[in-house]
Image (cartoon, rainbow, N blue to C red; front, side, top):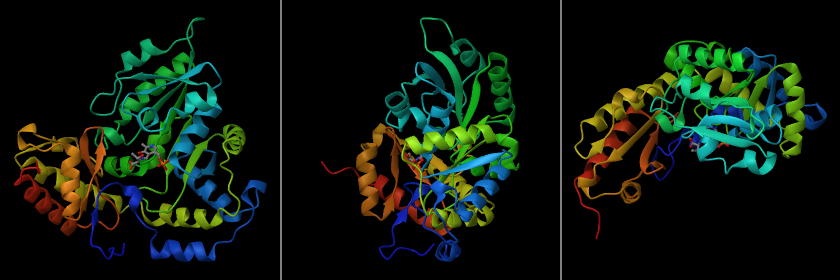
Length: 353
Ligand code: TLP
């Protein structure tokens, strides 16, 4: 990525990534048509390639990760039914309660452990169908788990949840916004992670660096219904091939390099652990998300610290009351070293009165 003129080191999110030169060329040259009428050949190619990549029959291109979750879950549920998800899930913490507002669908939240899982027995006892409760229709997992420091769910755990879902007759959904980070960390194909899920979403616009777009993947019959849901949400896009072209390049060229982001995140986490005033368990950092806290003895709270670092040219985001740094395309090892020096410099000062 071309360094911005202001030289900022932007670790707020992997969503800040800009399209690569190859993506821009593909966008300029994309063959397009009206995708709502089924006429865009580039979108069709993307949907097939993406579905194949996660081992599903079909895919549906949508504008965002949030719409991918909405399309998936509104298609799998009806009014007065419910989705079970973790209390740290993006679905629960960051999507404005859309399932309830738009679909009359209840979200039953269970505590996430720090590794992003929810214990199987806790899930088992939460599934319900009594006449006086909403009926559980879906269990939704997140992998990697954003607010759990980008944790990767163990494959064995996913299979245990899938066995429970099958036994109880509920669907299994994956918010796999960063599924390729999980795949690269585990050294497996994304299809191996996706296999036990009925429906899988992932994003092109995060670590894969495409400008816009996410995908919903599942069976042919499911995607046919999901297309109606997308239309209801106003998510049908016309000459969307210009976006799909970038997403295709993302899928083809940007997956393997995620290992670099993981190495940079690990370096950042290990060095942060050596700084007094920072609280972090670096062994939790498996992918590209580093979440840490400040020792109250430093006198800093996270939002003032974030502001002070911004003045040093380093941008972090907040994850609840904690600070978050996300590594991505365009962030180098040297940037990480510079960010660490800036963090150290701020820690050596006291916040202004
Ligand atoms: N996450 C964003 C913010 O909203 C926090 C980020 O910077 O990490 N699922 C997961 C697991 C996500 O992390 C996100 C975005 C989404 C869904 C939503 O994707 P978009 O922003 O494309 O709607």
